[in-house]
Image 1 (spheres, one colour):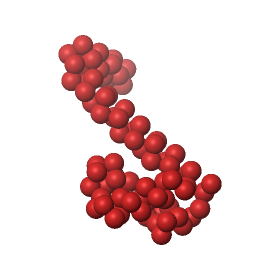
Image 2: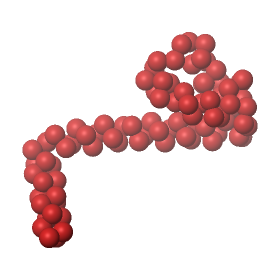
Image 3: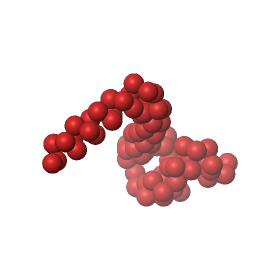
Image 4: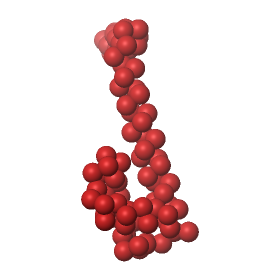
Length: 86
């Protein structure tokens, strides 16, 4: 079910608040409205899950780049690309 206005929070407002929600920075009443909207709006629920997944993958990727073997591989790709541009 998708409604543009659920639990007095619009889909657009939810999108604007998603970062604060995922960072656990919403005040309790706002969080309650946010979660009520998620419970009733399948589209927004999917959107929040996609953002949550994107954040998790980005964090894992950043951590991987710090590993010496990955940094060396990335360096090799960058060097290869630079050589190809000449």
